[in-house]
Length: 127
Figure 1 (cartoon, rainbow, N blue to C red):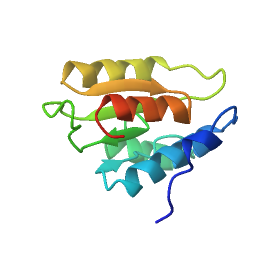
Figure 2: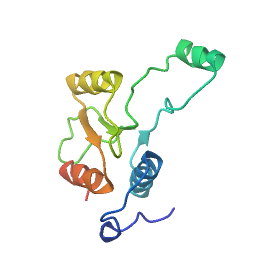
Figure 3: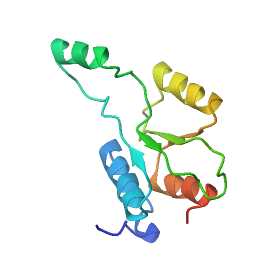
Figure 4: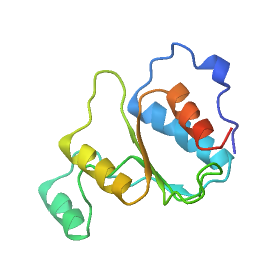
């Protein structure tokens, strides 16, 4: 497994959401945390979209959900991050999911940069 990019190399780097997600995933994998990404983004044809909906896929579920208990907040029931870059904004569905998860005892955040992700992880007790 590759080591994550050092923090000093992140300054002023413009990223796509895919690149930001890849950075976060690499960091989480390197530390052995339990997490998942629900692939609910992207365009699909009508039949596969309908099939996924019947299977329980929901619009707006966060990009990253971490199951591992954070060292500083062991009673936290999960961590949900919605990733955004540039001028992209949270959708109504994304705001709704973050509110639902927060009400259930999850730590939630909108993440826009690798530095912000690292700061959240440090705040949770992972350095």
